[in-house]
Image (cartoon, rainbow, N blue to C red):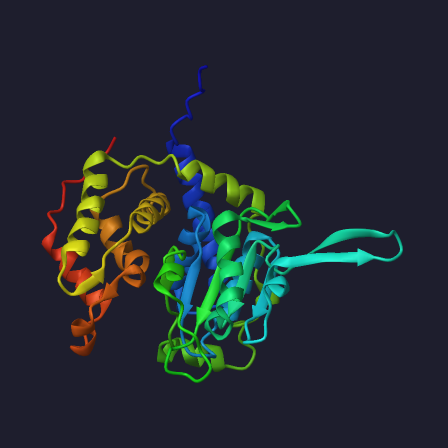
Length: 328
């Protein structure tokens, strides 16, 4: 049995993707001002087929960001407010009896959307969190033995309050590992905050976000970008970063293989967004913290010393030999 080789991604496709990426970023930034770096990270996860965890305080624009992304790509957006009494079926859907037809049919939950905002995910019970995380990984909901596929593309933007707030349940490390990226929006600069506060400003007006693409186009670009060239020295570099993190005495748990695979997918999209059909070490360095830091677990001694996983990862990157850029 022979298989048909997937054609390499060409310069024209890279140029088309770069233009699309820029249009999507501009559209989202019309509602989320002054946070282009965060917008670009969310778009990287969207095209790489992953999900995003936003750790931030209320009122920084997390909901606006998720809805603006959905509006820009022309997809469906849903928001789920996680609370301690939220049930798994409230997220995924359930079977209901129709008295008119006498049949049992599936009623889809809010996860059946292109962009799902899981607001304050750490306020829900573990079984509800697990139900969402299972859909994120499998991209299907199975009810009564029947699998129901979620739309493509499928992006979950989950928000998590700081763990010192009342009524929150910190996500376990195994569940954090399911998120491709972790970032925070943060408060805007003074200039952009004044722009947001100005009467008549379009900031936060999700309904005014222009639709510049459609879900089919976004999904197709994502599939093609998975073929973007990553040279063996770059793969070795990423592997060495993972090995160095596992050997660091300040870490109880280093970067997982799943995390390194996520980093490869992200740098493919990131490189294409820069207009390149190959990856360079700078791409890896730019995305290492958003992709890997939340997957690392500090030792108790490191925690007591006030060390952060971002600091450890920065030291790891500084200690790993950087290969020379290799283009195909």
